[in-house]
Amino acid sequence: MQGVLSGFTVGVTAERKAAEIGALFARRGARVLFGAAMHTVPLPEDGELAAATEEVLAAPVDHVVAVTGVGFRGWIESAQANGVGDRLLAQLRSAEILARGAKVRGAVRGAGLVESWTSPSEESAEVLERLLARDLSGKRVVLQVHGDPMLQFREALRAAGAEVVPVTVYRWTDPVDLPALDRLIDAVVRGEVDALPFTSAPAATNLLARADRTGRGELFRETLRNKVFIACVGPVTAAPIAAAGLPYALPDRARTASLVRLVADELPKRTGK
Image 1 (tube, rainbow, N blue to C red):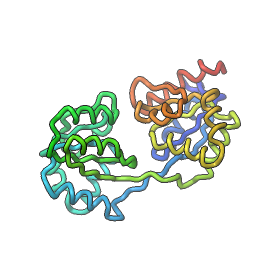
Image 2: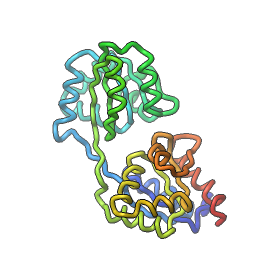
Image 3: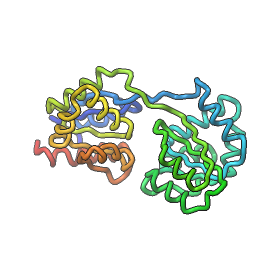
Image 4: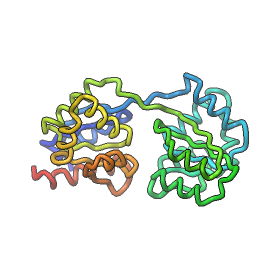
């Protein structure tokens, strides 16, 4: 496996674990270009998360939708830091918890809670479908979101008669190092990047948006479509890529190691290098 990506350049757009992901590709011989496409901003400091937690604690909860592992853990950690962690866990323990995927299921269990169901596809739409199959009239649904406000998800629940309590743990902004992202976009446009693996939908969304905002969108997309192997860790991550009409591949498991293996296996076949 070592050296299989020698002669190839891989762009890494992740912020979290960028060094780890880059090392996995470098170990296989790839040249790695880093350009974080977004920055995750925690909200505990401004009081918004604390206020949402108090709203959750104000009345019994019927259903909890846990969307991301890092977001769910961040929520529990923030509640513990504010002295309401035990109360929050007791409140959530009395509710049905639905997890959008294996990572968030791990976070739920790590908090000492037990989920009632995990989405096999790891897609929010499947979680929504599961909820809407129930009688939600008068039910209180807590929705832990991570950056994306999930407005359509909320409206569908409200239309079914539920009271929705959104809990936003993080927001996404432009990356701290915008020049690095711009250099990565330029490298793609010049045909110097062979593969772009994505581990989050916000990174994919903001990468495309940044190219558009800087007048390189059309050429950037054309280059991605014809010259770059795009790999997404799972269907949720792939959603903005699919919406842009770009081809992509998915690994057999939604894991970073599987994503790296996919690129290592497929890139040499597709380019003939």
